[in-house]
Image (cartoon, rainbow, N blue to C red):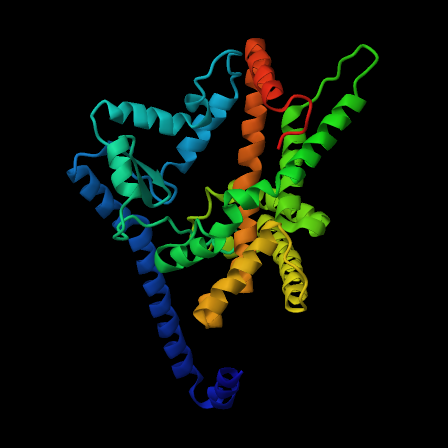
Length: 384
């Protein structure tokens, strides 16, 4: 407003000079931004590619802007268009055909291979000893990939952090995943499974059979389990978060090939607006639940044995031991860890359960052995 008023005041006398100066300034800013993007999208990837190839690494060549994303998408669609033979367990070429072919091809040369995630090179390590060196490295040479355009939409929990911040988050989160705490969640697992099985049993027809699409049913099951173990009595709100994060992830995946276009994620497209709207709703629900639980704890209410309760208790204890509020997690940090818990645990578990049921259906003798083992351990009692 101050600049606008100044321009209006002086425009009659010197508007040509002001316009020229403004044009020059705008041109300089534009050129600077263009230089930055050219460096990020062309010069830097080409320099890195040259350096990696000088080390003897092979793989795909960099394609401007998108790298291998378009080719990966094309190959995946081709693979998924063909059904997998019923008793075939060779799933890698179907799930990630592009990456599978690249790794197999370059394993023959005894070197890791290169692929491109947009302008970022990925070096795929398959040698166990070399992987051990990478995973145990303490010097910070191996950094996690960052996508600034998506960082506000995807969970920024433990898997996102590095260095001291990662160590602090891990210390505070660790109590939530100790065996004794996990045992307390077993009744929730049992109750959710019983509800699912009872519903299936009730749907059996007069002919003694019932056809069910397992994957959506098991997705619903894992959503129920995560919602109850994460938020306890706030289960319905947790369920809503689960549904919203599922939709958000699908929309993010649709945009993944376009995120490297400078400024694309800030365009007011329908998908971009919807993604930010969903994220705001998720954070609003989480902030409300976290605030209520923290207030209840301050008023002396006993800590609940769900993820949020254990996390808040551990955070409070960590803060008291260090004597500074800055040493603990913020409400935002806690929200991000809860989001990550959903993000990491839902589809992974439901897909694994679906695949397990498929294999048991294909191999009835495996069913017999599994059933015998379970009955031998628990008899007709609930698992404990």
